[in-house]
Length: 264
Image (cartoon, rainbow, N blue to C red):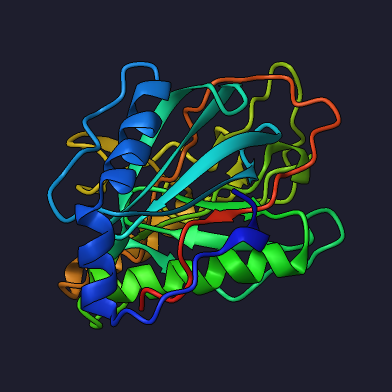
C-alpha cells in the first residue's frame, strides 16, 4: 500500500485504534511482519495496531544503511533489509513512550532527515522527500502522544548521537591528535564526539547503558563527576550502532506506507 492509498475513517482516537487492533487484517499484517524477521521477538499483543511501515536510510557510524521501519501504536520496530519486502534481520524495538523526535534536519548530505532520540540509542533517519518525512513525523508524533497518554515529557537521559567516523580526521577534544591506522578513533559514550585514546582513558558508570563503566572523554568525565556531586544525572548516553554492515548501492528510500491517517 502506498501513501496514496490511505484509509479514511471518522473514528475517534480511542475507537479507531481499538477497532484496528481487533481487526483480522491488523493481526494478519502484524504476523506478516513478525514472520519476515529472522529471530523475531513476538510482536502480537492485545491492543497493538500496525499503523504504518516504510524503508528509510539510517545514518550509522560507518555509513548510511537501508532499514525497514514499522510503526505501531506503542513501539517502533526496525531492522536490516535482507530481501526487500520479504526478509529482515537484526530487529530492534523501541517503546514509543521513550522516544523524542527533533526538528527536521536539512543538511546537504542528509536532506529530509530527522533525529530519533531514546535513552538507549539516538540516530538520524533520512526520507526520500519532504512529503514523506512529514508523513512519518505526523504519525510518529500522534503515536507517541497516544502511547504516552498525551504526557510525552522529555526524558532526563537520552542517548548521544554518535558523530559518523568520516566527520573527523583529528580528535574533537584536543584538536591535535590525528587519526591513523595506529591511532584509532573512539566515541565518547556521553557526548558522541570522536576522540583519541589519550583523551578518552577515563571510564564512567552510565547505568542505562551498561552495568560496567564505559568510555568517556576527559571533558565529559569532569562534567559527569560534577553532576554526580550535585546529585544530577547525565543527559546523554551511548548510542553505538551494532547493526551489521551491508552494501546499499544506489538505494533510494521507498515512500512510507501508512495504514490509516485519521485514527487519532
